[in-house]
Length: 234
Image (tube, rainbow, N blue to C red; front, side, top):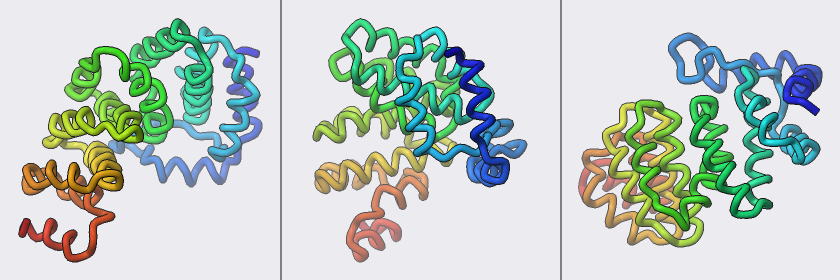
C-alpha cells in the first residue's frame, strides 16, 4: 500500500459536511493558524483504527503521508509513527525521532502536535541531551514551540517537572494563544501531581504571564485561590 492509495481511501471514507465543520473548528480561514488546511471529514477514532490497519507502512511511505495536504492523512501518519516508535527498538526510535524533527512544518496543527510530541520527542530525549527542546522553544515556527512544551508531558507523567518549568519560562512572552494554552495546560498537569511545585513557579511568574496561560494553569485551583491569582493578590 502506498501513501497515495491511502489518501484516496481517506477521501472515499470522508464526510463532506463534517469536513466543513472541522475546518471551521481548526481555524483554516485566511489569516488563521490553520489557514489552507484541508479536511476530508474523518473522525479521530476511525483514524486510530486505520493506524492499526496500516501500522506496517514503511517509513518512506509514512513520510509521504505526513507531507499530504490532507489533515487526516498527516494525523494518520503521526499515529502510525507513535505506534512504531513505541514498539520499535532503539535504532528505529532514533530514525523516527529524527524524521519527526526534520518534518515539523507538516505537524502543523495543535492536534497533530498533541498526539505525537510527548510520545516521540519527549520519550526519545528522556535519555538524551534535552537541548533540542530549547532550540524548538526558540523557533520562529509556532508548531516547533508547541512541540517543545508538549514533549515535556512525557516527563510530567513520570513526576519530573524541571524540564517543563524551564521550557515554560522560555515561552512566557510568546505571542501565540496556542502556546499560552499549551503552557498553561502543562503547568496545570504539574499542579495535579504536585500543587506546591506549580505554585512555586506561579508565584514568581503569574503577574507577567499571558492571561490565558494563567487561566489554564489555575483551572483546578480552589475558587478562592483562583480568584486571588486572577486579581494579583498572591
